[in-house]
Image 1 (cartoon, rainbow, N blue to C red):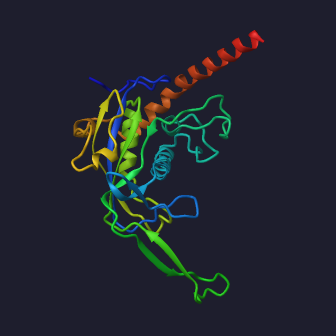
Image 2: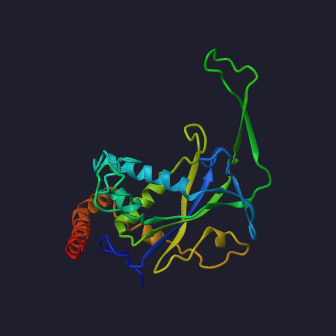
Image 3: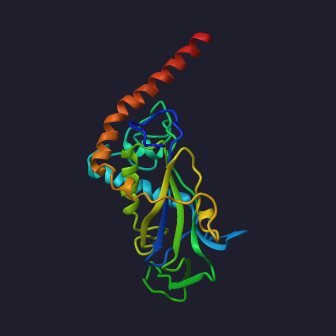
Length: 272
């Protein structure tokens, strides 16, 4: 039986906690890319046309929530996206970072242990809603004839996706699950749009990553199905204890990494 790791490991142990997550929009949402064009839908051969939320949107929001909670416990309170990552805290352990570009200038990089996929709407897209509002002129605060059109995903749309924690300890799982429950807004202009309800509907702890929204939304569902994780979720450590425990484990973990890198550099310099 696959179980959680007792302590974080530098080398992968091939353990995966997969969480099947549903996000229900309680308000219209603006889901788009960083490019000029809107990214709202994608056509799948077997699923038809669906609304999508790119994984980077979910991951970015989730990482900010993890950092926010971490600061509330006064653990590396100055660690921040994008170039001020400390690479020495629970959030950086989970989501990774590049040492050379961080303000800490660490000798190592960290790969993300939180893996995800595109979230796909449960239902097919019948039409895309346009929302039109007046564009206000900053000089005279008048609207004149200018109009601004926004493409939105309608409220009550439900998205499904899987989020995976690679080589998780119980503490890592506690942090991600607690902050997933705190994910209440998604998309652009989320100060006024994109209220969302996030629910973990199941998952699996195993030696492989074998679930996806694409297969779960087939009719009938295909592939590996999620287990009831109630027993696991109810027995995870308190989230503050989880942050504190991981934070105390990091000096030894990253100290070992620095020693390995220093040893390799020493061997390379001797051979030159």
